[in-house]
Image 1 (cartoon, one colour):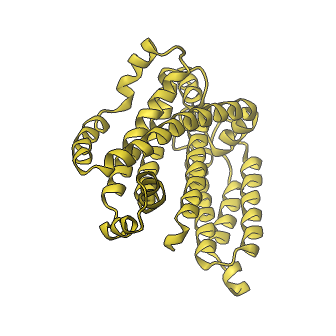
Image 2 (cartoon, rainbow, N blue to C red):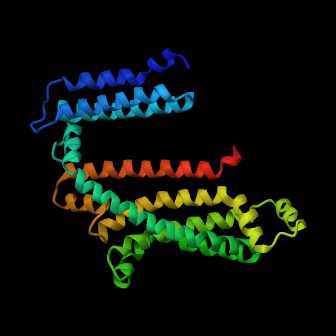
Length: 306
């Protein structure tokens, strides 16, 4: 890839535009922390330039610049409608510099809440996967049971797991176990359904070939059926993971004393919208990071398909 393709990118022009916007006079009466935005934008630009040196694939490089460009556009538009022109209520919609400053001030508290949310998600997700995949393998292996279980799955998966929160609060031993219970329910049914779908969709020729080789039932399930069903299983896991984060925030808002959902709910109740927006942005970044890592894991296990 030529240096011209690496250097002449719209993202760099958007970076320059964002910096120039910061030098416009502020109309907001609140502190806007403009230097923080400049430092943040410069930091992103430096990271992008440094990463572009090592990225060889055109597709990955374009994605990097597109993401950076999108961030610059959002920051620029956000700055214009808040700090520079004061079109929005500055109490409800603080300037991006103020949010970044709040993020820096609350970094220790936010780190603790991120850790709590991730642990809660991992517990519920891991428990659901460990139970749903073997159960889906055994039930999906039987055509009769699989057909019946499909309708049962559709019934239970149509019920939002948040409706079980009052029962979780009443029956579970600790309040912190309620979000884990909600994540478990949110993940179990998609993974279970995906596993059964994968098992029932395995090519019969593959199964017949394994039978010719006198493959036992256990080996058939875990050495033949499971690998062939992985794509559908990961599809269910992805769906469960996406729903889990949505419900995690809801569960933490209702039945938790820590976590990012609790952080957002706690400060929104007190009308601290700077911290509320800060928490929402952190949740978004956290979800993107976890999803990215999970996709990497999926690509590793399904590398043979490529």
